Every structure is written in C-alpha cells, then in structure tokens.
Image 1 (cartoon, rainbow, N blue to C red):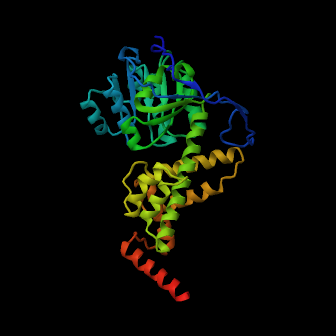
Image 2 (cartoon, helix red, strand yellow):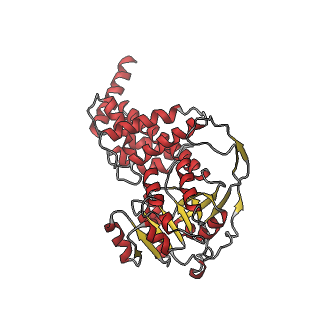
Image 3 (cartoon, one colour):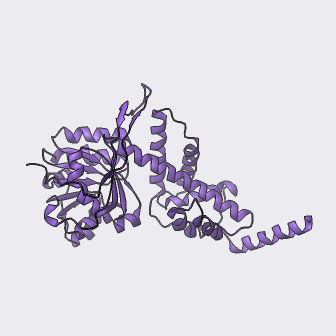
Length: 373
C-alpha cells in the first residue's frame, strides 16, 4: 500500500528561513547534532479554507489522550476524520468514542489499522514504550504508513523512535507542539516538525486542523531541539515573572497592577496576562503541568550540555521547579512554581497574596517616606 495521497503544501506556505549551522559536540555526549545541520526551515500558516475530506489520509490513529492529546484528537474527529484511538487508561477513550472514534486495545493494532498514526505522550520513556515496546506502534507499521510523534522528547529519543519506525519501511515525522490545553482545544497549536518531508506533506492538512501554523525544520532532532529551547525560555520567564509578583507585593505594590503594567509594555506576553491574575490569587488551574515543565527544562539543560552551551538562568529556574515538585505541585499548572519562592521567603511556610497586607505595607512605606522627609 502506498502512502496515503500525498498533498501539496498549501500555496500560502513560503520559505521562511534557510541556513546551515555547524555544531561541534563533545565525543562523550549522549546526543549530538549532525555537524552540518541543514535546517531548510519552512513556515506555513494554517490555510484559510478547510481541506476537502476526500483529500485527507483515509484512516488516522491517535495514541495518548491526556490533557493535550484528547482535544487534538477531538478536533480531528469534529473535522470529519476517521480516527482510531488508544490510551493506557481506556476510560479516557470513551468521550472520543462517543464522538465517533474507533478503539483498539494496543498501539500496535491502531498503527496496523491506520495510514497515519499520531502519538502524544507525557515523557521520553512513555514515547519509547508506546512506539517500540511490547505491542508498540512499530509492530503495526509497514511501508506506506506514517508515524507522527507530537510528544516533547529529547533528540536522542526521537532519533531512536525514528530508527525503529523506519526499519519497518514506514515514514517518521517528529512534530512537538508549542501551546498548552486551551490552544489544543481551539486548534491553535504550533507544530515544530522534522523528518520525512513526504510524510510532512501528507500530514499537513491534519496539522492544520489541530494547529494555527507549522514549521518544517529538516532532519529528525531539529523539531525536538526547537521545542526544548522554546520551553526552556518559557520556564525561565515564568520563574522570573513569579519573582516580580512576589517582590511587588513585598514592597507594598499591588501585583495585579504589575500584571496590567507589564501587559502594556514591551515585555507583554499572553502568558503573563493569562496566568498572572490566577497567580495573584494563588490559583493554578492546570493547562501545562509543572512536572512537564521541569522535565522539559531538564532535557533542555542536557541539550545545552551536549553542545557546551552555558545556561545558568535555565539551570536556576530548573531548581525552583524541582522545589515546587517536592511540595506536591507536580500536577498543578507550571505557574505554581511561584510557591517555591514563597517557601524560600517564609522559611518553609507558604503564604498567599493578601490585599490587606498590601494596603498596610503601602501605608507603612508612605509613613516611612514622610518621616524621612
């Protein structure tokens, strides 16, 4: 069976960036880039009109229905795709089955019955197990099929999965996403893809259903590296933002006003304006679990070490996330990292923002200023 109909990349795609980077990796690194990394990067915004149903790959598999995978698979089903699902906890498949999805009892069975199979797993170990383990997806792959891993893993893991999938004659594409729960629900993810270009072109209409844009970055490992760099920056930004909220409160300012000020300046970020109000109330509704942010920081630090790139800011942020995990906050949103700073500030006793405390401190600051005058 030939690969499901290969589609032309949308006409509004344009070459966005093309360059070669030469990275010299130490001989003892666990993962090293190709010395000449041909990035031949292309950026494609989502098409303005939907792709006709008969131009989509006929049968789509989806493995992993957690906080990200479930809404992504739902969007494929709602777009009219023929979707077959699997999850370790079968009950998580039930809402999708009620929407019209089919169910198979193993990744191997899903892959065997589908043309293109997506996987969205929590960590490298899970990604390897689902793809390559007993009754894993590789067992159901064959020439003409494709495997698209949208999990966030390190380059070595992605390369290992790629080798196993391609040994069956199938094609492989890594496609980690930038975005959390809400963008997944709204079909607003950003796909950072690398691997077999023909599979990228076949999967492009499906990526456009689940996301707002996609980048093709060349060889396997480049997508994983890009995602880790993005999440390294994000984790560091959140740690710094947390420091600012707590410092503003301690000197008598209103942290909510700080959020407003930041939202109108050069460092404005949707992350700050979305997370800030909840953080001020010491609430952390989970969109991106803290344990996953810490995992991504750990993997990013390993990536940096493999090319001898110092990352002291990310390393410091990683320690804060580890403290937050030790406080039982692993499954809270990653914005709960602020609690690690509260622990440090109050000698092991956490505190929450208090409007009463803020008012009294502002008065104290004003009285002190008048007295010194």
